[in-house]
Image 1 (cartoon, rainbow, N blue to C red):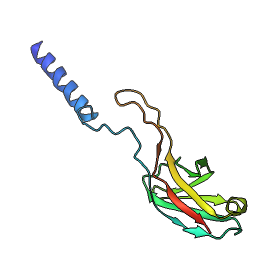
Image 2 (image 1 turned 90 degrees about the vertical axis):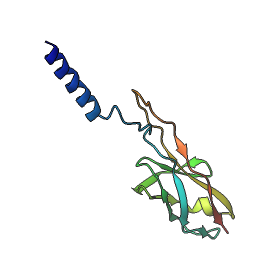
Image 3 (image 1 turned 90 degrees about the horizontal axis):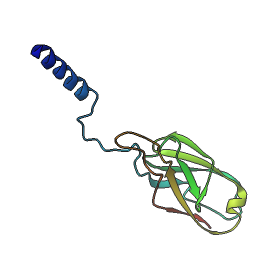
Image 4 (image 1 turned 180 degrees about the vertical axis):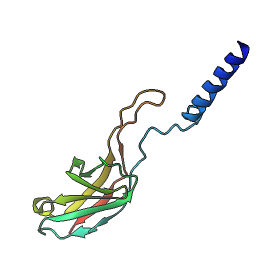
Length: 128
């Protein structure tokens, strides 16, 4: 009987280790997005509508680009690139636009739970 208990205990430990319960990975599923550059980097006031490409890192598949804190319809290209369609009305007047990227909140349960939405530092876009 003692041999059976030892075998069962050893099997349980092996299964637990194989499932990753011993690892110390406390990641909650998202990383802070970061913007490296914008393309184009600026436009002239009164220009027509255009596509803005946001290049950077750690963009989640459901990340959104914010234009002066307003969420825009965003196309995910890959974890380093997003695009948005900017209407002509948004660049009708000269000024500076604050561009950020927000990775959405991740819901979760269990040991590590989820994570809140994370927004990058702002990068200025100039309408000349």
